[in-house]
Each structure stands twice: as structure tokens, then as C-alpha cells.
Length: 301
Image (cartoon, rainbow, N blue to C red; front, side, top):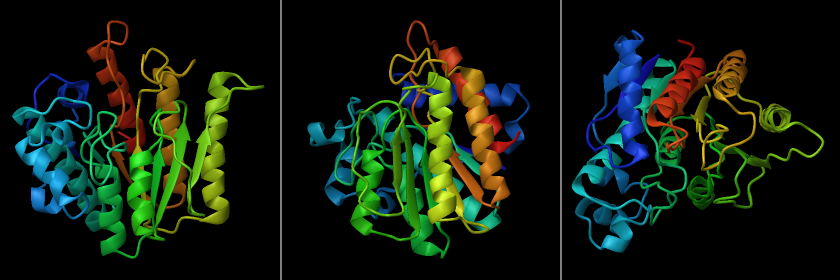
């Protein structure tokens, strides 16, 4: 197992700051040997997935409306973090494909970004980029399991445009932001509904339903890739996307169940941080701790 990190950025946004806090915690826990510094993605490589005009805006900051279309104000530090995070995710995928070993990227801010602009605190959609890279370069199936609180409408735009049969998009949603209508038979989207169930039971029933759908209609093969967009914004203390009863223990259980499902099917797991935002109640230290628990459970360390 390997964890990929990046350089660049400052502490202005949770999207960037939390990865630094998480890396520090991982070192304190004695997991530093698993961490590898990734190279930033180049603008030319980013333009294989996003439009050239949008990549140019991210690189130069002009036009400002496009460079900051993620909702986060563009500056040089943020630009460096954007390309650094995408590089970490792409190297995680490359490592997984070459080694058949699990990998994690300390990457956030991905699944809302569109091919031609950012959205929802997401600039480069490294979920879609990594999935398309794997599907274009290998015969493996790629399953994207998005358990961020919000829908992955940006990711869906990428894979719908290419219509690559090797990519499967599975989305468990507790907040309606960025909803989309799946248009491909291999994709599944469930919005958690607590009617007749406790909120936690409803959440895990939805996750189980998505995995059962996959087993029944699109069963994974040995060495297929499972990308897990492992958002912790479902934590009950999160002001953006929080779900009642989903505390750190329940998020850890979620990741353990996903890992067990993947291991039983001999899949290779590639994870990334996804959503999770701090405030006075859900402090940066708490946010980093929940992410670290998520990583350890998903990677089995």
C-alpha cells in the first residue's frame, strides 16, 4: 500500500490545508514509510481530460471568473495545489495498475469539476481523470464508488461524454447538491432516505444496495479497479452534508465494509480524500482525525 502526497498550496482552504494535517498525523502514527511525494500533473496532461481553455485559466489565473470557477479564489499557491493534488491521484492510479497494490491520494476537491470549468470547491476532476486514464490504457473495469455526501455530477459528465463501457459510476448521496440523472445502464445512484429506518441504518442499506446492484448486473473481475471518493463530509458534525449518526466510528465501518467487498472480489482499491470541511464545531484537528481513520480502514493499516 502507498499513500501519495503533493507539494504546493497554503492553509487558506480546507481542501488544501487538511491534507497537510493528515500527512502530519500519518507520520506521527508511524505510517510515514507508506507516504510518497508525487509530481504535479502538467497542464498538457490536464488538457487530455479538461478543455485547453480551462486548463490555461487554472495555470495563469486569467480569465479570473474561469480560474476561480470552483468557488475558491485563484492564486499561485492554490494553482500549485490544484496541479499537485491531481498529480497525487494520477500517480496513485499508475502505482495501482503497475503493482496491483492499493493506493491512496491525499487529494480533495475533484468530483464536481466539469470538463470546462470548476464547481463546488473542485477544480480538476482527478476522479474522472484517473478513471479515464485506467480505462483508456488497460482492459480493466473501473468502478467509481462515490461516498462523498454530495452527488458527483462532474464525474458523470466526463464519463457520459466518453461513454466508456469499462467505467462504472456508483454514487451514495445524502445531500442533493450536483445531482444528475444516470444515463448509462452500468451506473447507479441512491439518495439515502431514512423513512422507516434510523438514519445510520438507511445509510448502510443504501451502500449495500449499490454494491449488490454491481454484483448482480456488473460483477467485478479480478484486478479491476475500485476508486473510492471517500468523503467524510457525511460526519454528523459537518455543517456541509452531515448525516445524523454518522460519527467517526460509522465512517470507519463504512470504509471497512467497502474494503472487505473489494478484497473478496480481488479488486485493487485507489482512494482519495474528497469532501470534509471544518468550522468551530468540526475543528481542523477533528476533520484530519476522521480522514486518517478513513484512510487506515480503507487501506487496512
